[in-house]
Image 1 (cartoon, rainbow, N blue to C red):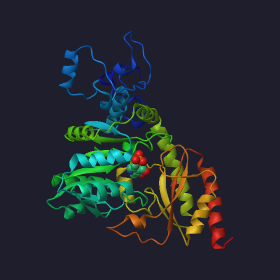
Image 2 (tube, protein in one colour):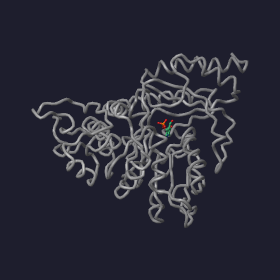
Image 3 (tube, protein in one colour):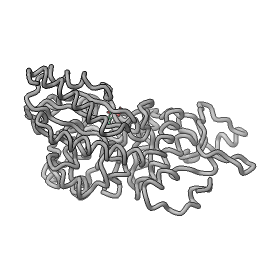
Image 4 (cartoon, protein in one colour):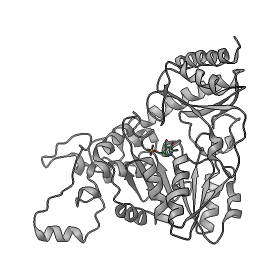
Length: 410
Ligand SMILES: Cc1ncc(COP(=O)(O)O)c(C=O)c1O
């Protein structure tokens, strides 16, 4: 691709080609002499300077979308990444960036909810999403009901006249149930209910959410978009008719992603398709190996039949990413900790989507209310990074040996 205007490019059919070209506009990379750089630079700004008072006044009356106005409205560094994310979602109207994934979830909810409304929130949602609903939304008069991740189109039975939004996360955090997103969206649309999907696990490359009927598609870009565990960033991509309210809400909240972090996100995006292929293939290899181990009672990976909603994964997703969990048979708290502590190649820490592998003890029961999580098997969540899968398997073999030793076995 040359550095031509976005409008001049032929639409790229395949995601791997799309992530290379998306969001690149000549006006953001080239100087007056016609030469330019490949990536938009980091434009840091608070003040934007105007030519005259008349120019200043004219700017205040115009739509500021992708126009220099004031630093809080962004610069080409943020606009370029926002455009790129919209281009990856066929049918999308626009994207707004946020300083974190949690900020993106919160802004999406606030853009569609008002006091007196009811939110339906999937029971397997990311814990801070639940906390936002139970905390700030409740304080401002929005009630939340939690629903079974496997509700599918049957969610229509839960709608009341007050229901204004459904927030899905598919697969679910920690427990990985795959939801019937198209059926839920169809039911919601029929009832005038807005749909929000936390699509961080799949990204638009493996699940184009707007095309599936979602109104607001949320990414914690901190994960696969940034891809290197060194920046916090979020995005919401809106279906037609949903963007103006999202943008107004976000402007009123004063939300702005830093240009430096947006730049890191744009840099990460260029390799996201290639990285996801590795994450996906390596995670599946590790998951299949774990599924054969006697110490492992269950593997919660959407591409394996043991995962609830596996049939929907096969129907709707183009591929898997690198995050899944497994349940340890007969584990104690100490044996699970011993397994994780014995790993050399897996870091112990929150987040995921970076190039390095991570392992975490997770306990979903305390985050569930609609459908109790009563599995007796202690869970370990793995983020499979870009290491060689066979090295990770050897490391996990050592970890399982440590778990057995604590239990008094060989
Ligand atoms: C599914 C999901 N959504 C949202 C978030 C929040 O993203 P951030 O950490 O950027 O606020 C996370 C973080 O772990 C997540 O796992």
